[in-house]
Length: 387
Image 1 (tube, rainbow, N blue to C red):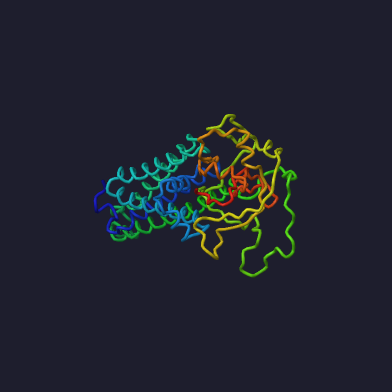
Image 2 (cartoon, rainbow, N blue to C red):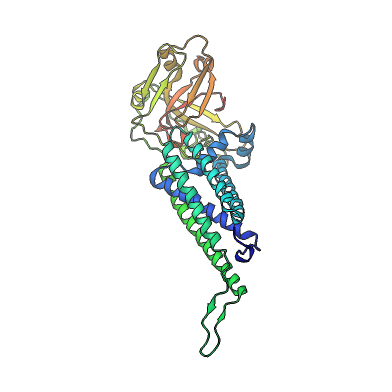
């Protein structure tokens, strides 16, 4: 434990700044590793954990405040929270380093556990990336706290003919503060650059647009093109058919899942007589149908943009369920995505003759964009997605 006359502890902000800078560099290191080797982003993993355990009603509040920017807002919040915790760790570490180190270790363990929950993430990579972040943070924190140590009076070379003397303590303290601020600023700068590069590499790995190299087969029942009088041209009014890149997206995925279409499968299991499995290519060989369906977020308000109409192409869900042989008493169809998200809806709704629930593979006559569910998604007219 450093004595008061050896530590520039009169400024309470200094250890907090050291912790915050160390925390920022730790997060940046984890982002860079995630971008370089495909390891999980710890910030995204903690954000996903927060989504899964959010209190009732939190989603509606966040969406109402931030709309489609809800994910970016959560990432920023998690980042700021982590840096704030690191600042607290810096204050604790100035008193006893093991206390501050414990904060970094606990956050790293939580982040690793959160990442390992995803079926798309290698648990080993999650632990390794968390360990890299923790070690980076602790080494940086010790380095910065060491820069707060005031040098004792040191001998200075006197001019010729004068008696040797010492550098004044006040000058040494001032030099220590400057040294610390320069080191902290440099750490934050490195964190900003490394974190930015890492985030760019991560985003490049999770493409949001069309990723399929396959073209959609001609549907068995194609919808006639819109007539000129069916196009809405009023300024400020949502178009009758919303383009794919402008279509709203509200879901729980902070990063668009990367799906290997060569190994992806659609499975129909549970209370069925004949469990079925389809590859993406097999879905494309089945009879395809088109229909315009408008979907809306439950949080959408009149005049807002969390609603859209598109021309969807896909396989009739009732045809697939009938082929599987749904057993009596099976009251719910539960869809499970590649990242583990589930949503259920009544079997009777899917089988009703007046509705055409579908396994969609196309959107506005293009393969589904990655951010809209590639390779396939459920489209159930008349129901909100959370039902």
